[in-house]
Every structure is written in C-alpha cells, then in structure tokens.
Length: 255
Image 1 (cartoon, rainbow, N blue to C red):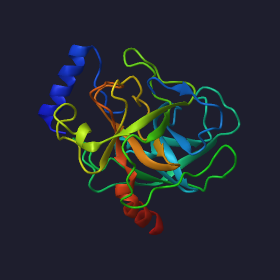
Image 2: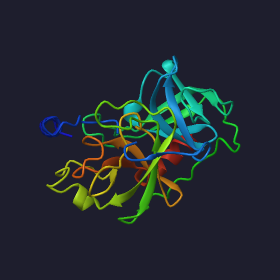
Image 3: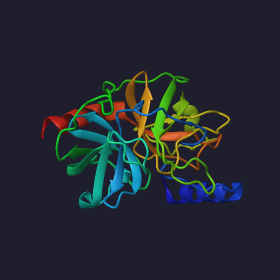
Image 4: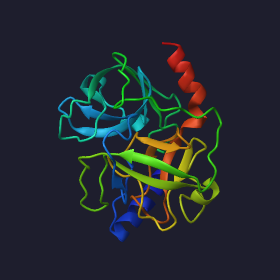
C-alpha cells in the first residue's frame, strides 16, 4: 500500500471515529469449546496473545508474515480456548524454523504469509486437529459464506482481546468490487481476497491476524489487514492461501 493511500485511510478512519487496522472478531459469537481445533495462538513467552495461526500438519503452522517476531520470544499454543484459563487441552510449542514468503511486502501486505515449523509434532486428538488446504489456484465463489475465528478485539473503539475464542461468518466479496474506487482503490494485489458484508458490522480485527478463514472446509484465507473493522466500504482483506499452495508444499517437503 502506498504511503499516500495509508494516510488517506488513516484520515478517513479518524474522521469517522474508527482506528485504522493492519491486524485485522467484530459482530461474532463465542464458539463452543473444541469446535475450532485447528487454530493456534501465537504468544509471547510471557503468555500474551498477539496473533492466530492454523495447524496444517503435525509440524507446521500457517500464519501471516506480519506476525513475525523473535522466534526465541514466541510460543505456539494448540488446543487453546480461553486465554486466561489452563484447561488441560493445550499443547505448547517453540518455533524450530520460520519461513516468510520471499515476496512479502510490509508496506502493502502483498504475500502476507508465513510458515512456522514446530519444535516437535503436535498430538492430534479431539482438541487439536489439522485443517485442509485448497489446491493451487482454487477460487471461492463470490457470496460464499466463510468462517473466520480468533481472539481479537470485539469492539472497534476501546475494545480488548477476547478471552474466549470467537467466530464470525462473512461472505466472499468480488475482488473487482473490493478493489474499486469505492473501496480499496486498486491497492489490493493478486495475492489477496476480501470477505465481509455490504453493511459492515462483522469482521476480523486486531488480534485476529494470521488466523483462519475457512471456506468449504478448507483454509482459503489468512487474516491480513483492512481499514478499520466492520466498515461497510472496506471488507476484511485476507491472504489467498490458494495462490501459495505450491510454495507451502515446497517448503514443507524440503525440510
């Protein structure tokens, strides 16, 4: 995203009383325990949640590149539900290796995708599972309802991170519409996809970054960025996993 466009988005957000958000649940609901078993929480070693991710094999987590931080200061937790309560379902991991996509651009969030290799295999059970990936180049039809999950803030203004995992369903938005002059004005790249309602109100938000957008039972999107949260003009922007399936397979098979 160009510096000028970032300033325009920030100005519009300030005028509307809503903060601009890179991290990108608003308008959702608390899930039932163990209903989203493929999601993981990325935390600091002190236990503070900062991003989500998805377990795509026993040893690999897929998340957003902008969630990158010091590997030695990062802990990955699978089987998480309540951030404040130890429930005995959690599995704790350290990072073994991190792979940020070589085309990642922190300015416009192009190729905002990252693989984390865990220090040991996860134990799969009814609390921890693997999510399927789409094939390379697969497309989800416009209007298809998808599920996004996370522990992000639940209010645009003065919101705090949700203690319990939350979900919201949002429809896929046509890229031509999302990238039009009435919305993101051409600043979206081919590595992105949009999801949200024309009336806004339901969206991912800060703290949901890196988390899963599940369409047709597969991980089609990674929470990436957007202008505010739940804004009618600006749907949530997700990294399109189908664009990167070959890259994901190549990295995983080479280790």
